[in-house]
Length: 166
Image (cartoon, helix red, strand yellow):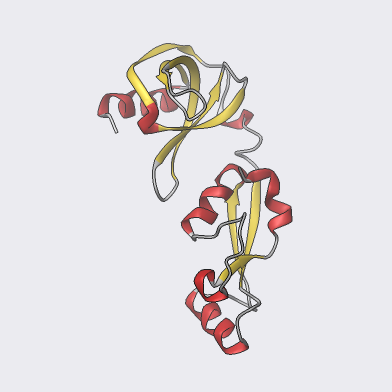
């Protein structure tokens, strides 16, 4: 990750500034200029993101740091803050349990492995970080693998989390 970019983003977060940046994405692999108001750096377990208000989309988004191009340009102070990011300020509970297809003894081992209490691990996370939490735990919310021993854990409250999954 480019040090100049990181410095500019961290400074913008600290000073509540807007940044003009060039960004590429899977939907638009050609560099596009955007104005963002960043508020938080996030490590997803695989890569770094910045949570920011995007003026183009008029919404808060996660931007992958390695997808920024060129030099960021500070624009002006932002009237948007982390307090305005309702999704970021929403806490959700992810309930992890052993795959019920495992035998009782196997489920007990998984409960011990993850420090589960009463057969479940309850994790609190910010709404937008829910998908990253599942990815870090190697839980594919779209597929229940054929063998229970290959995933070992499931999300008990997956339906409650759907709005946070992409």
